[in-house]
Image (cartoon, rainbow, N blue to C red; front, side, top):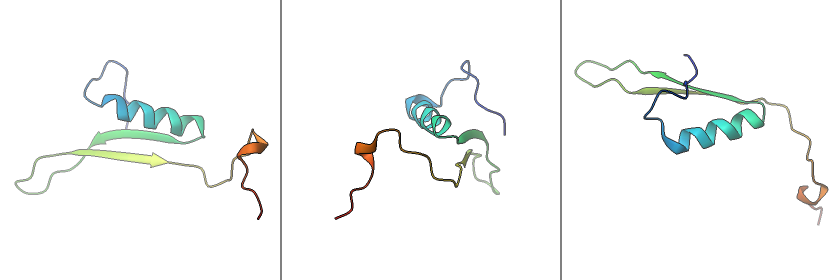
Length: 67
């Protein structure tokens, strides 16, 4: 699947926000054509790749407090 170009419409604000958040955290998201089954319309296939490693917290105030 290829990344969505800015000139391609129809993905909406939600996809833009999700893509931006994923890319900032080291992930990727892409959209492609899904395969429709017999008599069914083709839909979209969304692929999300997110790293498994824990990211370092930039602000110590955001860390989980031990109670």
